[in-house]
Image (cartoon, rainbow, N blue to C red; front, side):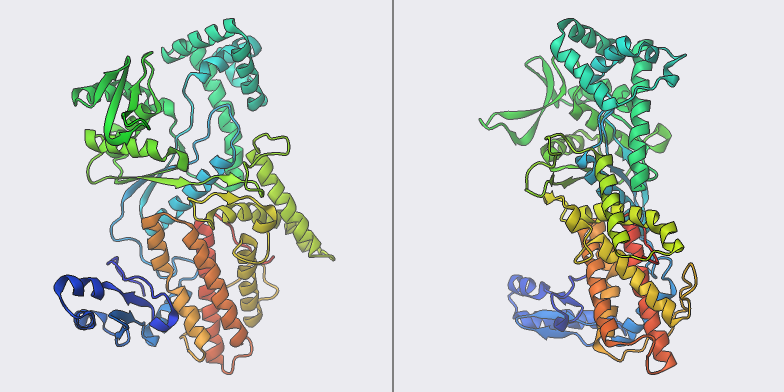
Length: 580
């Protein structure tokens, strides 16, 4: 029932105004010297031949608003089509203009624990990838891990004395480096306390950058051990298809980046370093703010790596081992906003990024404790991500068990799986349901609540609808639900109409998130859909409907609603459960 990708007017602010509201008449009338209502009538005259049987007669309201309302026959047709495709795409076509899109997200650091900042980037990035793939785009998921830098000299030198076998190709694969965080802290302490060690560590950096075998083997051992640890987190979060493309990958391009910027006259010398001055960026004293691309000691900076990455992702073709993407999303914390603004401006100005490619920073705020302060353990340490996720699963399990005082064997068999799905889903949903640019306060109680806009509420809503369908279609004893065949939709109550109006907003919601990149709009639509269904179910009996045709119609509305909840939860990376 859903067509095309023509720009849509905004949804009406209230149901009484219809489904969409065209607000352009006032602005147009002013520029044309017309009466706004006359202008609105001309808009209607132009629209009517295009509306066909889709919309009822457009109405002019107030000073010149044009209200558009779907015909009931269209609503019935659309709802049936969604029910017929409830386990698929809900009758929503793929985009007519597929793009190649790179999404840069997660980006943990080698030999460091993943923390809540990485959690936000991972959850938001994965959701955007799922959405863009669903819409029909060619998505490349890139993990820009922090696998390069001066700290590796310190780590390699620490391995030389504590784990010497890690520096040999023959033995490095068999080395167990143990707790990488403890290893990092021990190396850092030696670096801070021992001047001789510090000197050796700095020399190890030079050797590593020069490709010396021992240092490279030790570095590879550190990367491999870290990869094992953060893959455990990805497995728990069900993150798939994420291709590692660390900072080290771009080392081969950094010299060329600086050389080309110099040829273009963009990179100039300043205090021994090579820097780029960009229009509009100044220090507090009014002096130009430099973007450093080569430090005075000859080393390269984050900006250099990111410039090389932009070129590789947008300009280099697949034949040149590049992505040649038309859109690149960077999902990082809001504190990096200015860095990316400068890199994007420099990339466009230098031609490293073609004009038709879009570079977009997707910033997110901080995760705070319930007191609004830094999210940390009682001792003040950073909360380990694996501990946070395990705790969510534990609390979810306790709650689920407490609600079932007389568990049967079937319950005991699935309680661990359900606890995991609810616990991890609650963490994801709590993050995604917030405006990503806002800081949010982490609370197990709130995220695991059965009330309000939470994952457990949505999961129970889905399971409840499945239960309604099972009962009405004689499937109480079945393990997996068989969805009823879609039937003609009969409208006998206003809540049926309101539920359908809510369901068919799906393409608008998803296309809006595609453009604006705010996943909380998906969560808002999930909650509104559930609320609309509750109103429908309170007023419209399914099992005891007056006629078989009406029962089949209402079962189809249940099916379309369940399909909508299932699809949207899957897009945000949350599994559904048919029985809680």
